[in-house]
Amino acid sequence: AKAKAKALSSREIFSCRLVWAASEPISTSPVLAPTLSVAPASAAPMLTWPLRLDALVYARRAAPLGAGLGELQYRLCEEIESAAAALVAAAALSANPEGLRPVHCLLIPPQLALPVCVLYMLTAGEDETEMSCREQREQLHGRLSLPLDRPLLRSTFSLGAADADGPAIPGLLRDVHLGLAPSGVKGGAPVLVQGAYEYYHYMQWTGHGQLRKAYDDAGWGCAYRSLMSIISWYRLQRYTAFANPTHYEVQKRLVDNCGQPPDDLLGKKMWLGSQDVSLFLGDALGVSCKFLECPSGDDVAANARTLAHHFETQGTPVMIGGGELAFTLLGVDFNPNTGEARFLIMDPHYVGPDELGHIQPKWVGWKSQDSLTHLGTKLFHKDKHYNLCLPQRPSCV
Image (cartoon, rainbow, N blue to C red; front, side):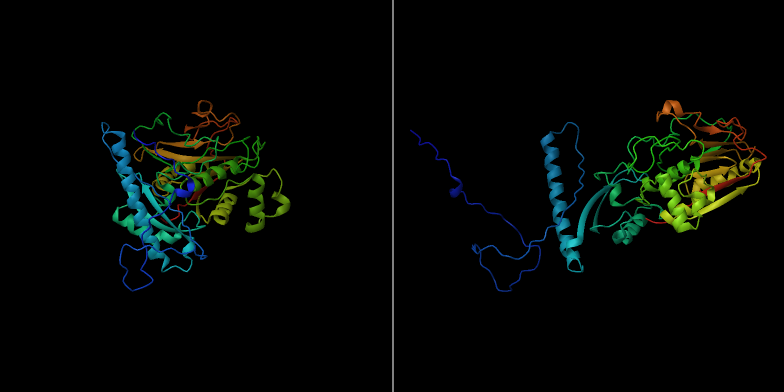
C-alpha cells in the first residue's frame, strides 16, 4: 500500500525568490555557478517604483480565451522588462531617481486608425502638461504626422487611464449639440467646436462639487455659466486641470488678480462682460483671447466668415455678450455665396433639469439673427452692441 503523503508544516517549506541583475555587478571577480550565499537581511533601504502597464492584444474571435490571455501575459512581461531597463538608464542620469514613474501607454488619437504604444518616463507629482516628456511627444507627433498645436499623446489620454473619458464633472451634460437637425442653410458649410465641453446653465450647482445643490443665479449669472462651459472645454482637452470655479471664486480672482473694484463685484449679483471672461481665462488658465466687436446685431451676421475661421483654426467655444444677455457660440453654418448664416447657440438661461429632450432645440440649437430669445427679443438686434470673446487654443503637445 502506498504511504500517505505527509503534510508539510510551515517550518519545512523553504521559500526562495529568483531575481536577475538590472545593473552592472558590484564585483568584477568571476563567480562560479551554482552558488548559494546566505547572509542576514541587509538594513539598506529598499526603493520601490510603481509601474503602469497598458497592453493590447489582437486575437481571433474563435481563438481560445487561454491563448489570448497567454499573449497578454507575454506582452505584459515584455513591458515590465522594457520599463525596468528604461528605469535603470534614467535613474543613472536623474538627481531624484525615486521620483521616476515609467508608464506604458496605448494611445489612439482620432487621426490614427490603430493605437500606438509608447513608454514615457514621467516624474512623481507632475501636472497634466507632463513637461518631462514634451520633447518625446513632439518627436512622436512629427513621425505620426499629428498636429503640433494640441495634446494628443499625453499619458492621461491612454486607453487604460482611469480618466480616459476625460475629467468630467458627474451629472452634467456634455456635447449637447450632438443629434441636432441640420441648420437649414442651403449650400452651407457648418464648422463646429472641436472637442468635448459641458453645458452650464442657470440654477445648477456651482463649483466643482463643494456645493451640490441648486445655485440661484437666474437673471445675472449667464456670463458666469458661459465661462464655466469654456473652462470645461480646456479641462476636457487636457490643457488644464483647473477645477470649475464658483461664482464667488470668479469674482474674487477678478478682484485680486485682475484689478476689478471689489465694492462693485465681490459677493454681488453682478453681470460679467466678455472682457471679464477674457481676464479670468488669462489669469487662471494662461489663455489669450481675441475680440470681435460688433456695433450692431447686423455686424454679427456679417462676420459669419470670421467666426467660421475661428472654429476651423481654434475650435474653442465663443462667449457672446450683448445688452443684458450672454450666450455661448458653438459653431457657424455659412454660405459664402449667398451670405446666409445660422449660429449654433448654447443658451445658459435655461433653468430646467439636465435632460437633453428639454434642451434641444430651443436652448441649444441653430439660430438665425432674428431668432427670439427667452425674453422675446431678437438674438442679434440691430440696435444692440455685441462683443464676442474668442478664446485661443494653446499651441502645445
